[in-house]
Amino acid sequence: MSELVTEKSVTMKSYLKQQMPRFFKILCFLFTLLTCGAPLQAEDISLLRTRTVKVLGSGSVLSSNVAKAKDRAVSNSLVVAVSQVADELLPKNGMVTYFQELNQTLFQDAEIYIQDYKVLTEFMSNNIYRVVVEATVSIDGLEKKLLDAGLIWTQKSLPKVLFLVVEHPLGDIFPRFWWSSDFPLYKAHSESAMAEVMGESGYTIIDYQNIILPTNLTELGQKTRLSNEKAIRIGHHSTAEVLIIGDALVQKATNIMGADKKTFKGIVSVRAIRSNTGEEIAYTRQTAITMDTDEIRGGLEALVQAGRLAGKELSIQLAATWQRISVSPEQIIIVVQGTSDLSSFVLFRKSLNKMSGVDGIFIKEMKPDEASIIVDYQGNAPTLAEALMLNTFDSFGINIYETTQNRLKIKLLKHKIEPQ
Picture 1: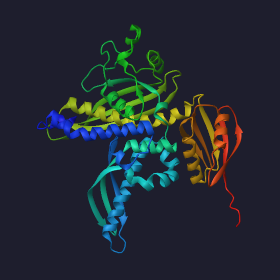
Picture 2 (picture 1 turned 90 degrees about the horizontal axis):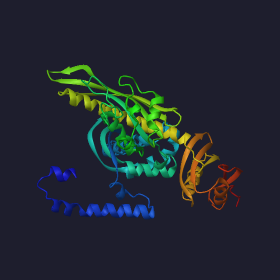
Picture 3 (picture 1 turned 60 degrees about the horizontal axis):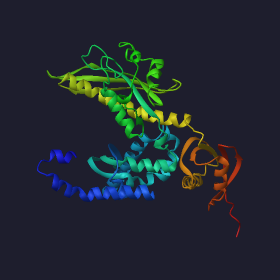
Picture 4 (picture 1 turned 45 degrees about the vertical axis):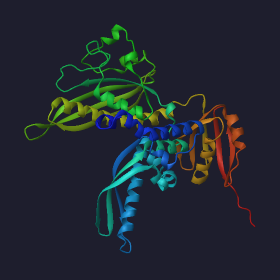
């Protein structure tokens, strides 16, 4: 709606008239996606969430063909853009763990996840053509691809999060936090930034305005850091599964420019613990530098930027950790051997993900020639094993050599080619 507010010459009636085709297209797309589960097409991706990044690409000049070199440089830059956004969605070290598969399945068709791009600058030196490209990448398109491949976990498995951040704005004598009797329901700027980033990643953020705390909890020490034990006492009054505890502060940096412009350093240090046990499962410390003529505005922006960095890092760490510790009784572990034959392993996962009763899969661990897969399945492992036996594959077979109530062990078998 920002276009409607800023462009005063457009009336409400004419604006709606102009936007109606787009609204209708979005509604049709959502209806198709929800009812049919159709795969994303290139024209659909433009309707979804995006992220814009700036990347470098290069291409060799062969046979004095500069135009082809530029095309190669741009094409390479788009792969870099997609890989950069994908890396933010993958679990920690996921780019390294799944690199072989990402090269074969994601990067070969990287262009379909690019909504638009523009070349910002270009230069040729020593027969190498380099470009700096600003590319807009579809987040939803990538998420769907990675979910279908089992490389990231379904959003429904991510935990409910409650923030318990003590913030020290520039110039304030006392720290501020929402459970305080002096600053009830104070919304920390760093926390808001973290919550926004983590919410976009699929986490459920607990609204503490609906939490009613006993009086003795609102009187917790004002000048001391919140301990895990006290945090758990507060978290007990919510539905949170993870508590994010820590401090955010602003410092005046030493750099100045002229008489007015000053720099400010925002520092956010937070840890994530399980609300039921107090086990620490993630930690990050992020800093951000801002410059402004106004101290209050510059300090708050430093908090926001550091908060966004912390939220991004926590999202990655928590997703990877939660996937390891939150296997429910409804989930089945499949240990697959023979995964060095990557094409067969990919086909096996695709077939598994499309089976009736399977709500999602995730590759929990990969070793040389072996992988562990978590499967959300409406049934037990023996039932899933019987269903898998009814699947046939052109290039390989399966040997289910061990079955328990919630675990299968499977070996992928290459078909022997009979002599003619």
